[in-house]
Length: 133
Ligand SMILES: [Zn+2]
Ligand SMILES: [Zn+2]
Image (cartoon, rainbow, N blue to C red):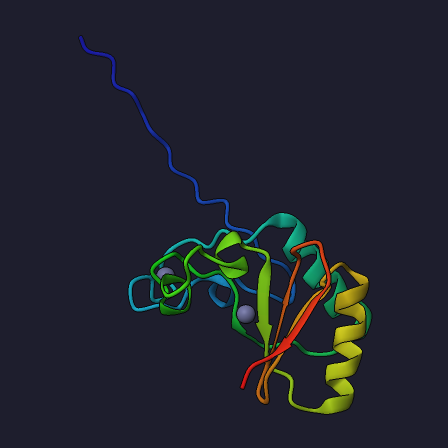
């Protein structure tokens, strides 16, 4: 009689009340939102806190990115999205954007990149600011 080894795979993917697993997954052609994301617990908690405290709806255009995501693949080293500590948030309305940013920065998102249709925040632990042209 041979002993069988049972391997149980659990994904234990994180999500919150306001941010679904689907929204947090990588959307590249390789993953297509079907592979588990690797968002850090601390980053998701900080995001959820900022969402609740601000009361501002924060639709994500990008969260976790695998190394094959075109935006990560063209970098020398994978960035903050691959590290699971970055979010791109689609808020166009300027007042809502400022309000969201205030609470995001208050929760540790000190790096902010601005574009017309979205802004990027991450939890790198130092201040940084830029705009996308
Ligand atoms: Zn991917
Ligand atoms: Zn980003």
